[in-house]
Amino acid sequence: MEKKLNEFKPGERGVVRRIEGEGQIRRRLFDMGVTPGADILLRKVAPLGDPVEVNLRGYELSLRKAEASCVVMEVK
Image (cartoon, rainbow, N blue to C red):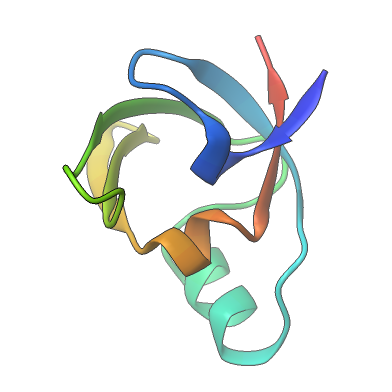
């Protein structure tokens, strides 16, 4: 089942399938290591939903809601 990273709940894990954004957002995500095949664990969501904290490739990363909505995940 596929869903976007911004729809995940804390504790959910998945694998990146594709990045839907274009331009700067897409480049920024690739630069941070959010690439197809990467395993991501959603650790925390801020009270208003922005930002989200994920565990990716052995480090913690905070993403804005707009960035997380560009990441299509396969739920594990």
